[in-house]
Amino acid sequence: MSAPAGRRGRRPGSSADTRLAILESARASFAERGYAGTTIRAVAGAAGVDAALVHHYFGSKDDLFLAALALPVDPRVVLAPALEGGIDGAAERFLRVFLSVWDDPEMQLPLLGLVRSVLDPGGVELLRSGFVPIILLPIGQALRIDHPEHRMPLLASQVIGLIMTRYVIRLEPIASMTADDVVATFAPTLQRYLAGDLPIEGD
Image (cartoon, rainbow, N blue to C red):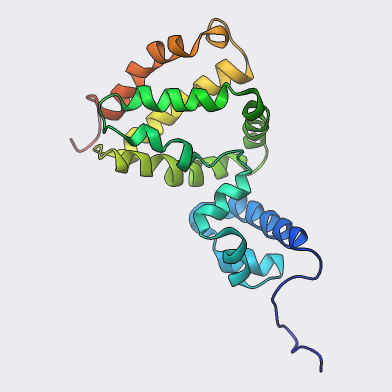
């Protein structure tokens, strides 16, 4: 007996094909609708699979988003040490973790590919509506800073600028700075964004 019409489960073909179809559907949805507007059910429907299969391969919506970004590391894991010790010195710890990843030659190439993909149509939306609320805001909340929705985008502005000048444009002297010099130069500004006095509306 043939399967009932319209029934969906695992796509024909290999599990790798199924994962790829789900990722392609997720990237398209995140780029077009943003993180908030994307649902697991919609991603599954566009990929021709059950929503349960998306959860099976990728877990939560956050995990699916990070998989769609094709990051070489999970930033939630590598940034965990920056949360230890509370707000005091958090910027320095954050920068040292950041530099340990970006200065690693094996990590740098795929990360640069990700940066360039942000310039493609939809890439900006992936960064704005996904990366900031999924990665950065939880860091601010874990550090118990006030107004993380305001402070963490400010931190992002500095970090994105550092990525562009040190790794993409390779602007001197930033490109040739040692990690210690980068930390000494940028950490005070990042720490002010995290905990210093800022002109935040409503304060």
